[in-house]
Length: 81
Image (cartoon, rainbow, N blue to C red; front, side, top):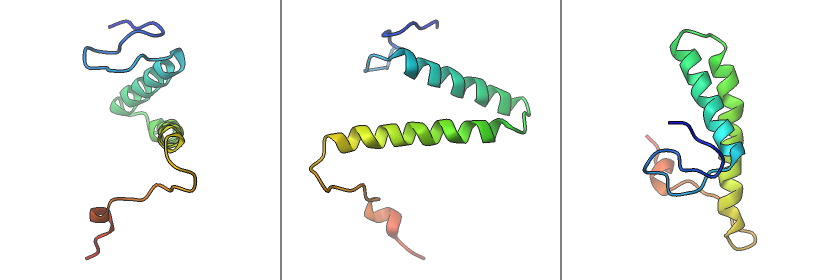
């Protein structure tokens, strides 16, 4: 499916996508395809994109929280042993 700015990606997408988001998705898709085809540098290319996206999502989430709020893992992630 071809996608231009502010169109839906797939029938299950609930949010309008910006051109920057579409470029990131395209870059990730390209890198994943390269990894599947045996490119040994694909993981090195993918990590910065994933990290950037996680930071962007966290910033968006935190923008709606009270001042001083922090992100904490759920308790089940903290189980030991």
